[in-house]
Amino acid sequence: MVSRSFLTVSLLFSFALSQAQWIRRDSTVFGIRNGIVVGFWPGAIEGLKESSNGGPRGLLRIGYNYGGVTYHINYIAVEPVVNGKMEFSEISPSVVDGKWGKFMWLKDSVISSEVLSVYVHMEKFANGSHPYLKLSIHKSRPEELCIEVFHHPDSAPMERCGITATMGNYSRLRKLYLKDTVINSRELYAGYDGIDFIEKAPYDIKEGDSCLVLATPDESFAELAAWPQEPAYLARWNWRYRPFYMLTQYWRKDKTVPSLQVRVNGRAKYWSGGNRDPQQYIAIPGGPSFENFELREKYVPGQKVYFGLRLLR
Image (cartoon, rainbow, N blue to C red; front, top):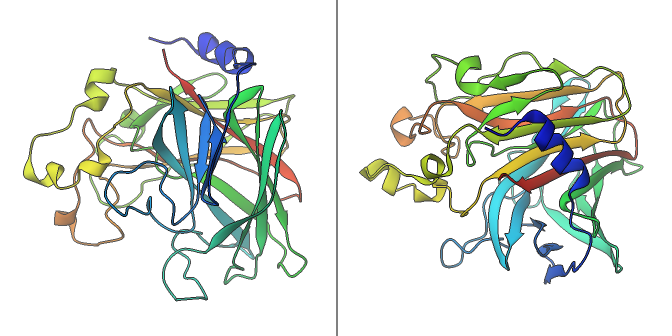
């Protein structure tokens, strides 16, 4: 068992400080060797199938590079709220073709020996919001992505602009480490077996100097990497955990604010593209896991949050 203190100390003080090598692949993938990698539609971080586009549009693909090999670990979505109405970047229809997923594109990248930064622009949302992001990776913290949120002059006022990791059930994240407690999704969502999301109340964060919230699997690596040898599961092998290591996923802020909350929801079945037929879903081995994982706060232009991946030893 990995202790809370070990995780906190290792995350904050054990980042590699040398031999960083930037990763750039056309305009769809950037990152750092032995650290975090970010991809954009239609590029795939990880080549699962011939001509794979890496998944839905309107999402940041989040990968982890180790020893020169990159695996796709999670997605990050943008969820702006205007007048109480939230939109979802991966399912909000594009004005270009009417299909799910806002177009995103990179602009004004900056690379130095110490930092790689890019601006991510996206279509305006139907609720009038028009956010954009600045993403940065620092050589001193290769396993961490800094996300800053801004808005264009034509944007409607945003109450919140959620930046949420959306695919926690791929890694079967079940242990949520808050400051004073550990919450297990199997206990939190015990008895739930539906095809939809399940959600409880968010967790308030007390105002202080900094905030670090962690999520990990609760299984051994052998359990996480195993996959049921049944036709329904073999047909959906893309959900099988493929890296040869486990990772802690975390959100961090330099300083808390009064509105800050930790929000998670869960799933008992893997996502099946919005299909409403229960027969098209397969149960997550071992029971419900966390799906969305985020820090929520009132929108302020330039607000900054960090998402990180760290080897779980």
